[in-house]
Image (cartoon, rainbow, N blue to C red; front, side, top):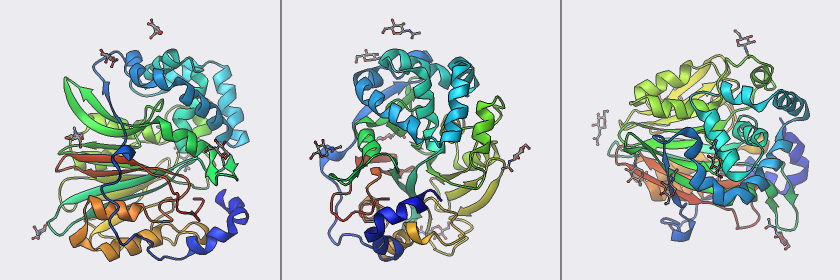
Length: 387
Ligand SMILES: *[C@@H]1O[C@H](CO)[C@@H](O)[C@H](O)[C@H]1NC(C)=O
Ligand SMILES: *[C@@H]1O[C@H](CO)[C@@H](O)[C@H](O)[C@H]1NC(C)=O
Ligand SMILES: *[C@@H]1O[C@H](CO)[C@@H](O)[C@H](O)[C@H]1NC(C)=O
Ligand SMILES: *[C@@H]1O[C@H](CO)[C@@H](O)[C@H](O)[C@H]1NC(C)=O
Ligand SMILES: *[C@@H]1O[C@H](CO)[C@@H](O)[C@H](O)[C@H]1NC(C)=O
Ligand SMILES: *[C@@H]1O[C@H](CO)[C@@H](O)[C@H](O)[C@H]1NC(C)=O
């Protein structure tokens, strides 16, 4: 709905966005240049919460600060008023309402970086409000299951006409890293992170499952989010929920059950991958329910080997002004189940419009084999679709 406003701004891109042609390069783009691989850091959950993120966030304090204050502008004004009013009442009350010790982790990041804790709270809930993405789980001819995603973020934040970039998207790029999350003296899972954000948008536990999150828009206008800031803290934030599930559940089946049962603050798409050939799911969530489940097992849309999600309900046509699902499906059909692998999925996610001016990274995962790779992504072959 918000994106409609931008249609006028980007008419030339429309022709590209509206059709369902696959724009995949004919030559392989994989492996990409080594310098595009995200750096790795270790996050140790055995440490006190306030110390966990210090090493990663302290050196990036200026970059995090630069970005966090822009994110506050991202909130629609009526939502911003509620959030600011709640922050005036005291950030501690909000931090204490966050699950586990995530509030303390955010306090530790504030202490390490000198960034206002209220601003960090807003940054940690931003993904509820805005985010574009492509996530998919696909099976190859040998029954190996792959999970891949692009993360797009920063729509509406400072269109830089000269550079044809989104200012906020550019500010996120230096914050990207992969984390090995340690617990009980061993690596429990891998995740792709923006420094300063403590939820889970992309993660994988070898031998267990993988999760990605795509933003969903519905007609409740952030009712649950507003209720949270007004004091009803029974709803769960999506990135915190996926992190809790990653840390508390062992198998795909358990994660599938858990992700459908939380009461959420807002709508979302949760994408789950596993180790077995039928373990792949797109869960469409509203705040109170799981509305729709498309899995490799039920093959609800008769694709034969994949499930895919962008930012629109997958059982209806995507809007004409933002059809990233059509081209992605054309590419997947062109690849075919026999050729599903990191290289073909990377090529597909490097093709416009799934690669667009908001795209920040691509992560490729194979849960059974314990392979987890993430790369910086930036659309530089103009004209790029703006989203
Ligand atoms: C931070 O890095 C130092 C030096 O590499 C290391 O000794 C320390 O354990 C790390 N601290 C945390 C909280 O990870
Ligand atoms: C805040 O950071 C300082 C060092 O910059 C450290 O000595 C102190 O323990 C930290 N406080 C908390 C509550 O983590
Ligand atoms: C893939 O798994 C299905 C059942 O889950 C089985 O029928 C089929 O033979 C398997 N294919 C291969 C190539 O292993
Ligand atoms: C945009 O272009 C201007 C002028 O060419 C340059 O100074 C600036 O750093 C660029 N901004 C970004 C975010 O790349
Ligand atoms: C994390 O990713 C690395 C690199 O791909 C892999 O070797 C390791 O098995 C993964 N660990 C877990 C717990 O998923
Ligand atoms: C979700 O449930 C709560 C309490 O049961 C109710 O107040 C709210 O209106 C529901 N939200 C939606 C979007 O249906």
